Length: 153
Image (tube, rainbow, N blue to C red; front, side):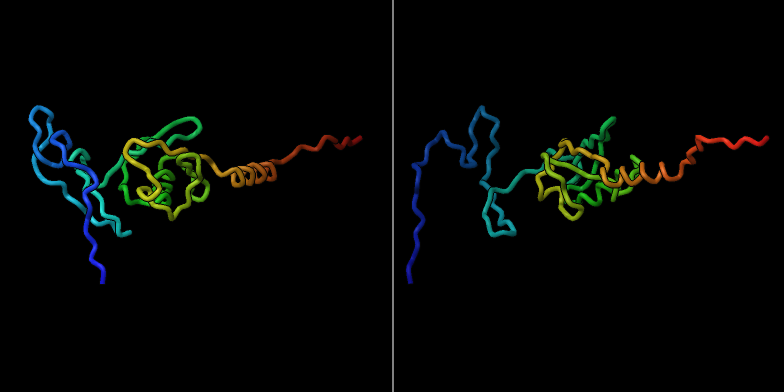
């Protein structure tokens, strides 16, 4: 069995912030807190004091002609965002395409896993295939007048 020792890579310096109080710099005293992520990665624990609601983010959704500011849970999916947008835009969820960072996102993708943060912008477009089907349906329903008139003598 092999014993592993941790090696000190850097010499400690009084200028480095290791959680100790530094006067005049606004650093609070205390130790660094660590958390273990689900993937097994050990990372420094984040402070979530600045967010007002627990896990709530505000997203700006931009359509072609208007935009909407929506508050939603960070752990929501794009499908849930589409349901909220369907109430605002009168487009069904299947008629919408949501783009974030230049890529179309699926309904089952989570906002926080993709990287959507507070005050980010999401682009909403109408699905071109469904838009074309609507136009074809409208043109079929229109009565086209006959260019010929019957003349009775």
